Image 1: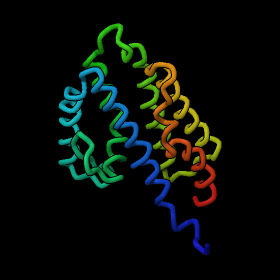
Image 2: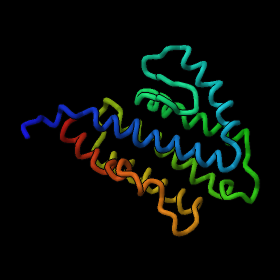
Image 3: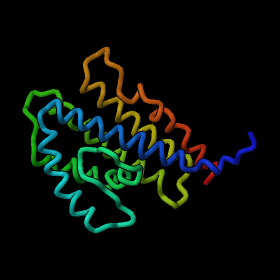
Length: 180
Protein backbone atom coordinates (compact mmCIF):
# COMPACT_ATOMS: atom_id res chain seq x y z
CA UNK A 1 0.00 0.00 0.00
CA UNK A 2 3.01 2.27 0.23
CA UNK A 3 2.69 3.18 3.91
CA UNK A 4 5.59 2.99 6.34
CA UNK A 5 4.85 0.76 9.34
CA UNK A 6 6.42 3.39 11.60
CA UNK A 7 3.44 5.68 10.82
CA UNK A 8 1.26 3.46 13.00
CA UNK A 9 3.22 3.29 16.26
CA UNK A 10 0.19 4.71 18.11
CA UNK A 11 -1.75 1.53 17.38
CA UNK A 12 0.19 -0.38 20.03
CA UNK A 13 -0.46 2.34 22.58
CA UNK A 14 -4.15 2.38 21.65
CA UNK A 15 -4.25 -1.41 22.01
CA UNK A 16 -2.80 -1.19 25.52
CA UNK A 17 -4.67 1.89 26.80
CA UNK A 18 -8.14 1.61 25.34
CA UNK A 19 -7.97 -2.15 24.83
CA UNK A 20 -6.20 -3.97 27.64
CA UNK A 21 -6.19 -1.52 30.55
CA UNK A 22 -9.75 -0.43 29.82
CA UNK A 23 -10.91 -4.07 29.73
CA UNK A 24 -9.24 -4.83 33.06
CA UNK A 25 -10.91 -1.77 34.62
CA UNK A 26 -14.28 -2.88 33.21
CA UNK A 27 -13.76 -6.44 34.45
CA UNK A 28 -12.87 -5.39 37.99
CA UNK A 29 -15.83 -3.00 38.01
CA UNK A 30 -18.11 -5.87 37.01
CA UNK A 31 -16.64 -8.20 39.66
CA UNK A 32 -16.90 -5.56 42.39
CA UNK A 33 -20.50 -4.77 41.39
CA UNK A 34 -21.40 -8.47 41.57
CA UNK A 35 -20.18 -8.45 45.18
CA UNK A 36 -21.67 -5.07 46.17
CA UNK A 37 -18.21 -3.50 46.54
CA UNK A 38 -18.16 -1.12 43.56
CA UNK A 39 -19.52 1.93 45.42
CA UNK A 40 -17.02 1.37 48.24
CA UNK A 41 -14.17 0.97 45.76
CA UNK A 42 -15.11 4.15 43.88
CA UNK A 43 -15.14 6.14 47.14
CA UNK A 44 -11.80 4.63 48.16
CA UNK A 45 -10.06 5.04 44.79
CA UNK A 46 -11.45 8.48 44.00
CA UNK A 47 -9.82 9.89 47.14
CA UNK A 48 -6.45 9.03 45.61
CA UNK A 49 -7.37 9.79 42.02
CA UNK A 50 -8.65 13.28 42.87
CA UNK A 51 -5.47 14.15 44.77
CA UNK A 52 -3.20 12.79 42.05
CA UNK A 53 -5.17 14.61 39.33
CA UNK A 54 -4.73 17.86 41.27
CA UNK A 55 -0.94 17.54 40.87
CA UNK A 56 -1.36 17.83 37.06
CA UNK A 57 1.49 15.43 36.41
CA UNK A 58 2.54 15.09 32.78
CA UNK A 59 3.31 11.42 33.25
CA UNK A 60 0.18 10.41 35.22
CA UNK A 61 -3.12 11.79 33.93
CA UNK A 62 -6.08 10.34 35.82
CA UNK A 63 -9.79 10.96 36.14
CA UNK A 64 -12.24 9.82 38.77
CA UNK A 65 -14.20 6.61 38.51
CA UNK A 66 -16.47 5.52 36.93
CA UNK A 67 -14.55 5.31 33.67
CA UNK A 68 -16.46 7.62 31.35
CA UNK A 69 -14.92 9.69 28.57
CA UNK A 70 -11.44 8.58 29.53
CA UNK A 71 -8.63 9.16 27.06
CA UNK A 72 -5.87 6.63 26.55
CA UNK A 73 -3.59 8.69 28.81
CA UNK A 74 -6.18 8.45 31.61
CA UNK A 75 -6.18 4.65 31.25
CA UNK A 76 -2.37 4.61 31.39
CA UNK A 77 -2.40 6.88 34.45
CA UNK A 78 -4.83 4.53 36.17
CA UNK A 79 -2.70 1.56 35.12
CA UNK A 80 0.25 3.11 37.00
CA UNK A 81 -1.88 3.19 40.15
CA UNK A 82 -4.05 0.09 39.85
CA UNK A 83 -1.79 -2.29 41.78
CA UNK A 84 -1.77 0.07 44.76
CA UNK A 85 -5.47 0.97 44.56
CA UNK A 86 -6.76 -2.57 44.26
CA UNK A 87 -4.22 -3.94 46.72
CA UNK A 88 -5.08 -1.44 49.44
CA UNK A 89 -8.80 -1.84 48.80
CA UNK A 90 -8.64 -5.63 49.06
CA UNK A 91 -6.71 -5.35 52.34
CA UNK A 92 -9.26 -2.96 53.85
CA UNK A 93 -12.45 -4.48 52.46
CA UNK A 94 -12.41 -8.26 52.75
CA UNK A 95 -14.94 -10.23 50.78
CA UNK A 96 -17.41 -12.59 52.42
CA UNK A 97 -15.87 -15.93 53.27
CA UNK A 98 -17.17 -18.59 50.91
CA UNK A 99 -17.96 -16.18 48.07
CA UNK A 100 -16.48 -17.06 44.71
CA UNK A 101 -14.42 -13.84 44.74
CA UNK A 102 -12.77 -14.65 48.05
CA UNK A 103 -11.82 -18.04 46.61
CA UNK A 104 -10.17 -16.51 43.54
CA UNK A 105 -8.89 -13.20 44.93
CA UNK A 106 -5.30 -14.38 44.52
CA UNK A 107 -5.90 -14.94 40.79
CA UNK A 108 -7.44 -11.47 40.47
CA UNK A 109 -4.42 -9.92 42.20
CA UNK A 110 -2.07 -11.88 39.95
CA UNK A 111 -3.91 -10.69 36.86
CA UNK A 112 -3.71 -7.05 37.96
CA UNK A 113 -0.03 -7.35 38.92
CA UNK A 114 0.95 -9.14 35.72
CA UNK A 115 -0.90 -6.45 33.74
CA UNK A 116 1.13 -3.79 35.53
CA UNK A 117 4.41 -5.57 34.78
CA UNK A 118 3.48 -6.20 31.15
CA UNK A 119 2.44 -2.58 30.54
CA UNK A 120 5.63 -1.33 32.20
CA UNK A 121 7.84 -3.51 30.03
CA UNK A 122 5.97 -2.70 26.83
CA UNK A 123 5.97 1.06 27.43
CA UNK A 124 9.53 1.57 28.64
CA UNK A 125 12.02 3.47 26.50
CA UNK A 126 14.69 0.94 27.44
CA UNK A 127 15.41 -1.94 25.12
CA UNK A 128 13.73 -5.05 26.48
CA UNK A 129 14.61 -8.32 24.76
CA UNK A 130 11.80 -9.68 22.61
CA UNK A 131 11.79 -12.94 24.59
CA UNK A 132 11.22 -11.06 27.87
CA UNK A 133 8.29 -9.11 26.37
CA UNK A 134 6.82 -12.34 25.03
CA UNK A 135 7.07 -14.00 28.45
CA UNK A 136 5.44 -11.01 30.20
CA UNK A 137 2.53 -11.07 27.74
CA UNK A 138 2.05 -14.82 28.08
CA UNK A 139 2.17 -14.62 31.89
CA UNK A 140 -0.50 -11.90 31.79
CA UNK A 141 -2.72 -13.92 29.43
CA UNK A 142 -2.22 -17.01 31.62
CA UNK A 143 -3.25 -15.00 34.69
CA UNK A 144 -6.38 -13.82 32.85
CA UNK A 145 -7.19 -17.43 32.00
CA UNK A 146 -6.57 -18.65 35.58
CA UNK A 147 -8.81 -15.92 36.99
CA UNK A 148 -11.59 -16.88 34.59
CA UNK A 149 -11.24 -20.59 35.43
CA UNK A 150 -11.65 -19.83 39.13
CA UNK A 151 -14.28 -17.09 38.96
CA UNK A 152 -16.68 -18.16 36.22
CA UNK A 153 -18.64 -21.36 35.91
CA UNK A 154 -17.66 -23.91 33.32
CA UNK A 155 -18.95 -23.19 29.85
CA UNK A 156 -18.56 -19.40 30.07
CA UNK A 157 -16.02 -18.05 27.58
CA UNK A 158 -13.12 -16.20 29.18
CA UNK A 159 -13.60 -12.42 28.93
CA UNK A 160 -10.22 -12.02 27.26
CA UNK A 161 -10.95 -14.64 24.59
CA UNK A 162 -13.85 -12.58 23.25
CA UNK A 163 -11.69 -9.51 22.65
CA UNK A 164 -9.18 -9.33 19.83
CA UNK A 165 -7.03 -6.91 21.81
CA UNK A 166 -5.78 -9.61 24.17
CA UNK A 167 -4.74 -12.02 21.42
CA UNK A 168 -3.14 -9.10 19.51
CA UNK A 169 -0.75 -8.65 22.43
CA UNK A 170 1.14 -11.66 21.12
CA UNK A 171 2.15 -9.60 18.05
CA UNK A 172 3.64 -6.69 20.01
CA UNK A 173 7.12 -8.10 20.73
CA UNK A 174 7.69 -8.62 17.00
CA UNK A 175 6.36 -5.14 16.20
CA UNK A 176 8.53 -3.52 18.89
CA UNK A 177 11.55 -5.46 17.66
CA UNK A 178 10.87 -4.29 14.10
CA UNK A 179 9.86 -0.67 14.81
CA UNK A 180 11.72 0.01 18.04
